[in-house]
Length: 293
Figure 1 (cartoon, rainbow, N blue to C red):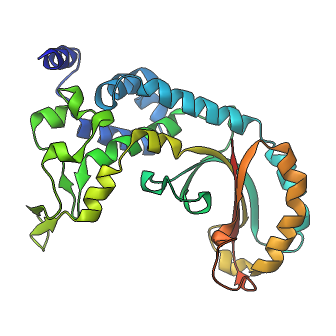
Figure 2: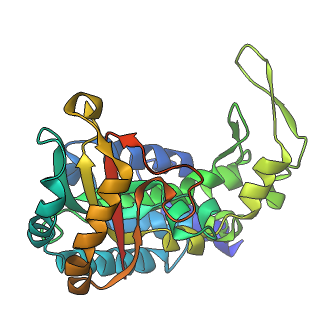
């Protein structure tokens, strides 16, 4: 009853009933809007994070992002580019070559994998001393909220009751998410609007939800340096490189770069170290990621 009173008083200060699904859609809108700064502010994000995710998590997210930006602000990308010139001289001149700070991330289901298979995404940060930290905060909030909303394919809405939908009790906050509380089990079947007319929840869907952990999600965001050779667009039109020769050249240069960084691990493209194919092959683009502490 105490939580319901808290929720009702909370709504009195809001323009209308506002669900966790509404908030998630707004987070997506904030993320993609060019006018994000005028649409959202820290006060609003904190209010709804405390309410939907749980008390204390806003502070943890803020501290994580602050720490990431401190690490990135210490990186001299121009120095790294200068050191890479010996590598660049050996590849077709038309290829893009750049070094950029970024935030590496991956799904929480990858948490226990080795680093070279753990991070499948990156959020690029052009200037760590000036860029808006809200971009990263919103990305993290979306990753925390999204798994608690739908399951299966086509997607089935997990939160069916008003209590779950509007999070009227701490039990329904993301910090306490437990798929067992929603009555969804392996083999659950539901109606859909698509041609199939029905959807199913499988054991793999349930396992992924049972593995859900905000701590794991937060641990999947790391400061990182990305060095790209070749570019992502039209790489085939700018010529090819030999992977073995390129990696050998990179090995010659890295000893002059790594001592300047407080780093955790170097992640080479195409899972170098445990790849099961001949590296004496032609490639068109290549990325090195240096995870920072």
